[in-house]
Amino acid sequence: MSDEERRDSLADQAAAWVPPWERPRPPAPAEAPDPANSAEALAPEPEPATVPPATAGDLGSKLPLQGPKSSKISAEPGVGASGAADVPSRAVGRRRVTAAPEPAPDLPDAELRGALEAILLVVDEPVSELVLAQVLEQPAERIGPMLDEIAAGYTAAGHGFELRRAAGGWRLYTRPEYATYVERFVLDGQSVRLTQAALETLAVVAYKQPVTRSRISAIRGVNCDGVIRTLVTRGLVEECGAEPDSGAFLYKTTTLFLEKLGLNTVDELPPLAPFLPDDVEELADATR
Image (cartoon, rainbow, N blue to C red; front, side, top):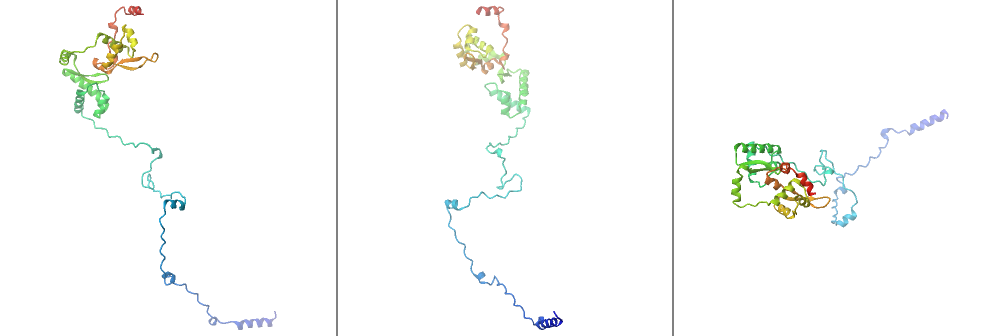
């Protein structure tokens, strides 16, 4: 470009230049309508549409199948969403266990002694230490020593009765030295005694128990079926199973037998050796 042409171009630009104060202003932007004064804001709100109640069948067909929403878990340990304490799964189905009752306080020795004496006066059969401990709600280790003390006190005082063990328990008995007076008062001339055959059979059962009727008959040398029935009826002998080989019934003495004889166990029966004849072995060989 020549110098002349450059000058013409500059002159054209200068002639076309317009000062800023003379330039036309751009149009102002349109203002947004005020929502408070607009026609849409002044229009009344539409009422919510009422939905008719749905039946159980409609709910089952229209509601989406989804599981229960997760509930908020409490931060407190041991408490679930419902507020109830959490129960371990192993406890489900078990019976509720209640707290054991508090043990009764120990009775004073004088009161315990009186309570034992009162119970022993009304029992009709020997009562064990365990039963007495349960009735009095006292430790079993206190009952035995207290009964021994009561028995020793009766003996030292010379009472007409005594407290002794019999048939696995304790009971009050009259002393042997006063037996004639007690017998005269109770029997009043009437006595029911066992026959000689019954006494012999009872002795065989006592020393050979458990024993079958055939064995008793072999020892006595006579049939003893009727005598056994009499002893069973009077409560002195009872059945205690059957012999494995023959299936015959076995018999043994009862607690009533021990009570009548004043024994605690059959081990306290006197030995038979002093009462056997000198030629017992010869007699035994002769019967074979």
